[in-house]
Length: 256
Ligand code: SF4
Ligand code: FES
Image (cartoon, rainbow, N blue to C red; front, side, top):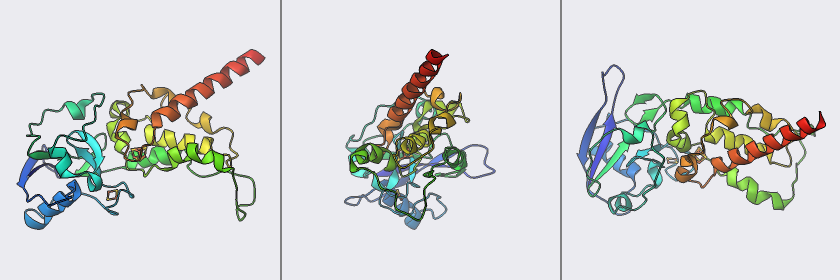
């Protein structure tokens, strides 16, 4: 198999692609293929990883034009044409790159982030949005005590707590590509996760993103949900938050 890899380093006028012929191993992931390149052909190839088990999220990149985790994407299934994901288009997907899908895997950096080197991107903008939504429980009660909740809340909460902050949804969202001020799917889903947590006592959570670049900037393309490796549905959180905010606004109008 061949790996076609995006290459760029500071100071270069424009990026280019390198193609490496690799020995396909059984169960080989895209991350393993990148290691093979580093070990056998070019130790200057830059990419990030940590857990190698779909937990840390740092290996998210654009693989065959879909944001995915390199450590859990199998080369064999890509070459067989499996794992296709239909996405609403945006410039990074439409950028013309030729590759033979039956023999090659195309690997590019996660879109919508500045490239530092090769497949490494600067995720600052993503974590600034995350910080903005204040992702911590806020409660007046004694923090040294347990905060219990009914188990019936768990299924809804778990939908959102599964997020590993990989940024795949951010790299797949056409709105994030156009508007750097948009908070993005992951931060909004996290905000909603604290809003529905029965232990949280901040009743103004939703208002935090009741701004043009918050809930209302989403165009409901749905790419976030399609690429999320953990099945988190940010689009659902955004839709529900909008409905709740509109109902609240209608109620306060009625009272006037
Ligand atoms: S919502 Fe899914 S795709 Fe987005 S950061 Fe979390 S785990 Fe990654
Ligand atoms: S290396 Fe941690 S999610 Fe891939």
